[in-house]
Image (cartoon, rainbow, N blue to C red):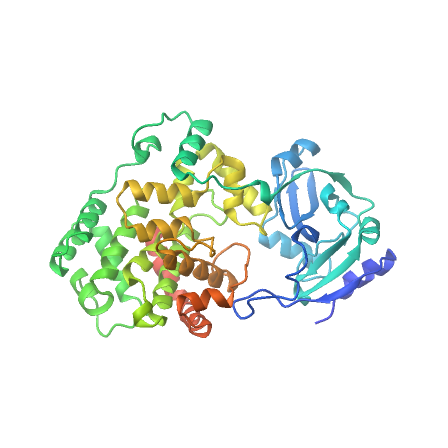
Length: 462
């Protein structure tokens, strides 16, 4: 695909010399791309922002986080990221499918981070053509000569995470809240008490003699939870023959004991905190991601050879709780939650844990895993949640975190989860004894059934 004509016209009009570099888009099908050797500091990212005074286009290096507060303080503005629909409309008005990291309109003020002007060469990705425009610093300077140059970014390398998770949580809580550090973390965070149903299920999980009857009895004492388990098992996703009329039916005929006990536990925990209404996509996306992640984790485990499979139920629970830290973050840092979400929206190229670390000095995954430890959740779940964005982690139970990483990236590749795409290395699949093709087949099943899974998410979110 060629470079859009509108971009070519703009560059030619300014007499800017450039080269076109072919680029294979990162996706589950292509673990590596030809642009991998380009330093991240030389790849230009674009952020479209607006407030009551109008819109601003900001350019920054891809290895940096746009600090909205710093930019707003410098400009005396209250800028936030344009939503997706507004970005699409703006791109269409400028004659392109997606907005490129270069000024296409003189009417759109441009802010450029000073770090870009210190690089010998710069690369501008044209997403709809899967190509990069390579410019020397001299040519890039001509392109942005009308821009306001300032320092409004933070290098991601500076946003390192502490090695002591509990201490990191305590320090963040002390710094940003008036809560007193107590002996138990759930008291420090002033978390609501565990639902009675969750306590019973946790006890049931560690009882080797527990059976279907005991599980059904516990779940059925919570009518809402029982209805959700039956609804889940009745979904066309599982294509169970005949009607599912009870929790007992859901366990015996469709899901199995292990899956139901972890499903019930995940649903019960997630219902223990009020869902925040200020998320990037509103209320429903939390449950959408939970349902998609749990379903895909199930599919990936089933695609692995029997000798290498982790616990299906625990993998399912990891998927269901994969974004539980989002709820905890909103609960613990309510005054800062809006700022966190606004910063994430302005930095779609950055993993959210960098934003968490920047604004509250602790990540949602760290908080969630520490809280789960206090609740005596399985170590497999703690590792899965804590390290899900770090495929290089090779400690105990890393199979769960690596499966979650693959799950996150596969869902992002088809638009069922928000976040930057990262390459899925062949070695990752090899280490898990998982075929890339089988992983994509599991993703295909989720995509095919996404409407039915969406109905489940709506039921849970209601």
